Length: 142
Image (cartoon, rainbow, N blue to C red; front, top):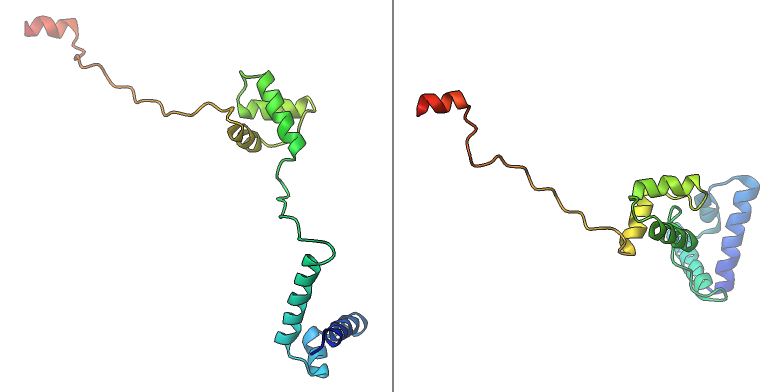
């Protein structure tokens, strides 16, 4: 089907949906167009829009990702206060109106900037090799 006719069918389906509340499938069956064909046309049209006049679409942005300004503020604040850990940094930055990010985000930012000390597991304390024998028992044995 020509592109102009495909566009006209898509417009007619949208207009009918708005005016009558008919589902898309009902309008498509009245027009004699299969669902698969219609949705294939829509996907192809969406791809053309993304490639055409507006250029390629930007990469998706996570809604809770820290902004570059916030990341810079966290790094600067952490360098001014090296004695504080990430949780304390996060709360102090909120109190002082520096940045509003969670403690886990602060940790991620500091880890990316290599400002976090590597964590090492504590070694388990072991008892000394000597036996703890009371003085009374030592006298009885000796």
